[in-house]
Image 1 (cartoon, rainbow, N blue to C red):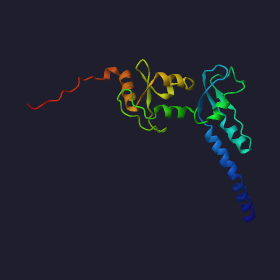
Image 2: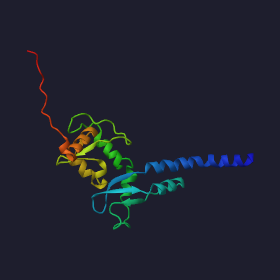
Image 3: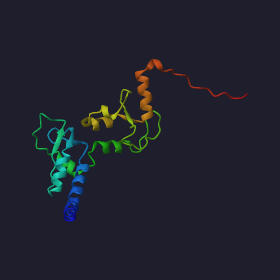
Image 4: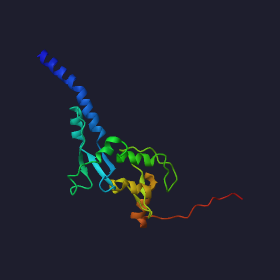
Length: 185
């Protein structure tokens, strides 16, 4: 019985570097990315097949392929030349990182307060549209992100909630005039 445990322990330890490498590649290629389609020269949202990337890396042959693209199913059998952009900068085209860079050192367009560091499990800042509405990230198709970030302004979570409440329930809002300071005579 002890020999069996020793053999199993040796097997697990010998596979550990391969499993670590596979896990690293899996984590590296997860998430939606925005790249420029070589055919149309327009932004597209793609997802890398992270499981395939992990397995191929563990086998010593790094090979990427797409799991999804906003041009599919029509262009499902394209040559996937856009993968070169991902291989060149896997973190640079990741939607999450594009948003982090855009909000870095940004100020809320409504209250002029700095936008706090973004925590993915917490309330996230929003965007102010050119027509004055606030929207959340989930309302933006990833492939439109470059254009949206060029035309929209950053808004903090508090202002987004207040503005959204005001838009949805205008009859519950009472706009009071600014208070005057009383001076002693």
